[in-house]
Length: 214
Image (tube, rainbow, N blue to C red; front, side, top):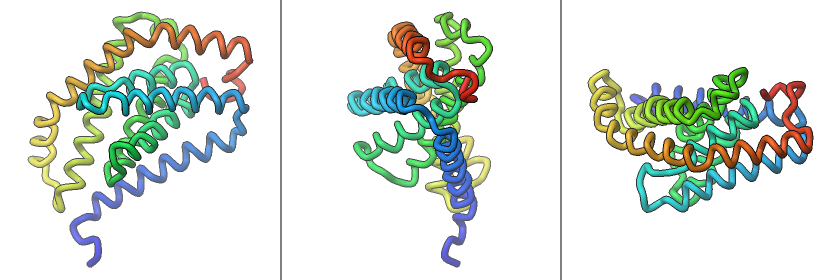
């Protein structure tokens, strides 16, 4: 059998790819304004550039912080797309591989969840403690678990509970560093980007509630 022993991995990849496609399709179906697309492209570019610029520091990257900010300010679809596109584009530098769809989904779902969590409590995003704790948890738990799970599926034909547990345990130090990086960059970038995006939304009337983004 061609895919013998890889059924779990292939099923997971298929689900992830379909999820990413559905988000992109729903965004396109909404027919976003040109200005909204430009703002999303800029935020994606910043996140991508940030990930590439810090290539010499493993796990210490600003991209999760920027994706969280994008989700909070621009909504669910834009948050997901910013995350997914950041992983896809930056992996042309780091190397495309079977891990890329997992990274796209992990980054994307963080942007999506961030929009939901702060949708009706946006004032909490301006609380540094709340935002930083949230950022650390999302990076350590959500991104860490998804990518560690991907590692098991990619390198184990028949995943066992022991395989998952050992991989999760070995990933803890790396996920902690990644979480700390998110906290640091949220402290540095959240307030100025919140203010800038708020002014742009108000000035140009972008991302209104009728657009089903917020």
